Image 1 (tube, one colour):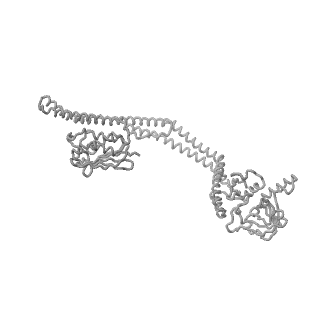
Image 2: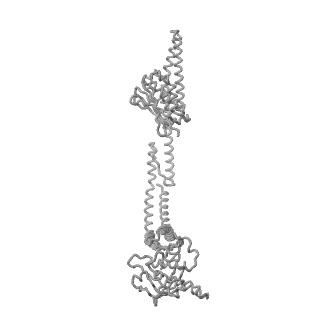
Image 3: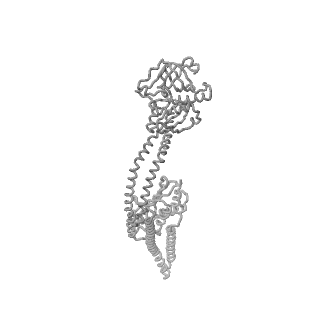
Length: 598
């Protein structure tokens, strides 16, 4: 075990732990608070879009809207409500006064009756404490801001009792002082006042299900601030897309999110939300208090981790040792996992490369040996088969030549010449078949595909072989359906001729030969069945071999070169189709498949 590697691992572990600790410290003290605020605002903005859809689909149902607001608060810990175009709470009809104006006020105001919302002037706790006197039939004086049919109160007086919207009242007083300093007329004041008698008072039931916003003084104050700016500041951007405003109250920071939307009737509504940033301040402070414990814990963890990894550094060496032992025993399945770029990593990589190279070369050597062994066996079988096949015709020709040379049976001279000619034809056919088989087995022959009707080919071949069929008095049954296939026509004809000729050769006289095609989904199955003796099960796979005959004596009386089925097998393999032979109930069935033309 090298000291350099252990030292490097120790330094790396300590540096990594210190880096993590420094990252946590910097992130918590500098970036986390801002990240939390931005993340929360982004999440709330996304959820406001969902709230907007739910609000527009609520069909002005107060219960549905209040449920949306409560669900939003529960899911986001953020207060939310909707305001009309003048900043008044929408769907808050349970906390108001209805006042009938006196004649003078009616002339100045242009109305006989007006509604005064009370949540801007008085807190709901005064109702709960039963300090609100009965106002019905009482004369009151009110002044505030009037916009079209909406009145926003700034002050309400009844004798010595007065309630005030301090935020709006302060702003109005400032504007009045400014007008006075500029020596402008009182008619230019933004406020308006009137007198009248309270005809009706609507108060929320403190014991029942009232709007929870009435109890949230902080949220109402932020709404009043927005309403003041909306009515008096002249801010041109206030009606634009979603805005985020920083708001601070009692040394606690908040985020106000205001989004103007269009109602179905075209009227303007504001979605108003307020999120507190106090939880992140508490979380950051809590983390700072625990930094001492975190630093101590990290230092202990660093020492333990460094000690552990210095011990674990020997593990790659042990894996290398185990792997090299397996390579020595010609087991190349094991690979060394490279986890570093130091000396051990280089060594592991070199051993893996050496293992792959040895494995590749040994596999190639084994394949070459196996190929050579198969080639040698094929060569021996081929020489043996050719020797056997040529021995008989050569013997016959030698006998005929001896008879003719000795002058014996001069009257049969023509007969012996015909016999020798027949054997020469067989040898010629044998050589042609051997050359064709060698061509197919070379691996370089490319099969050219045609499109043709298989039923026409079968009918044509049966016509060509009709003399041989009639000679043995066979009963040929054809069940052929018209079908167009994709294959090499000449070679498929050769396969069908070989199969039918084979059936003719091994079928007893006056028996049946059945030729059929079966139409499947994407292919055609061609079947040639001959009645007669079965083929032994252990010989079914061997009949495709060159020079193999079912009769063990390898008699030539039935003709053929013994290469027909071997050639057919190679043709079908080059087509990439399925083929085979099966014993049927009373005969043998040869079959192969061809692809249909799409």
